Image 1 (spheres, rainbow, N blue to C red):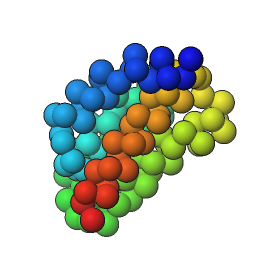
Image 2 (cartoon, one colour):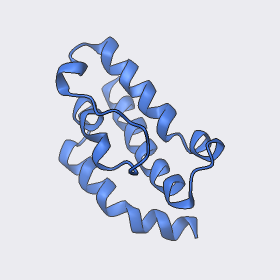
Image 3 (cartoon, rainbow, N blue to C red):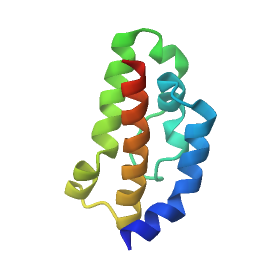
Image 4 (cartoon, one colour):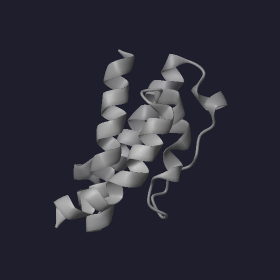
Length: 99
């Protein structure tokens, strides 16, 4: 079931990723467009991501929100768990590309 959900949700996440490639600032400033409705994420603007320290802080906050183990601990639905895994993978790869 989890694999089928991941595939069903892959389209919007892939589109989000393709739009920003490995531009971590772009991904973080638009992550709200791929998150579930009641995620609790407060959108950040590019102006909030001007220096590396701010980028790291927002990236860490995003990872805490979408890390599959954290979503599971908060009692997230199967759909939220599948979506969080996809988003987490994109953010991780973008962070590694930035290093």
